[in-house]
Length: 168
Image (cartoon, rainbow, N blue to C red; front, side):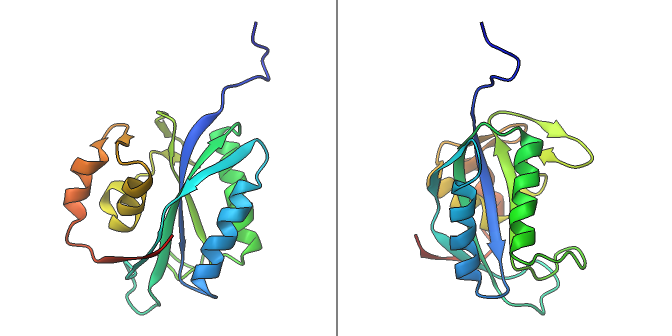
């Protein structure tokens, strides 16, 4: 019989982005920190991708990636752990879409659909962003985004967004 504190692990996908203070290093270091989270293992991460900022345009290009993890953390515990990593990297939230040292977003958490004041899963804007969908499709080509559909169908809507694959 399963005890109350026993729970199954879930596969989750985390978006990583940075455009300040050596973005390549920020992303690589954040992947290591995610892998070191309690009850969590890093299964895989995508290549790194370069993309222009959404807005405002007067800021450096972004480096983006997606990580696939296996975690025993709840979605809220995972969110809090990711926010702590962002803080250690000097993340400042001046305004929406501001330049940042590190941005970590939970994209998917198993098949969970969640909409609370603090957390929405699947990430509400992920299907509009090539810099999320292309790295996600690289590591999860058969991915299904709950409430939206298969990634290979959704990615067509972002085909006009320019991103460049850099390295693994």
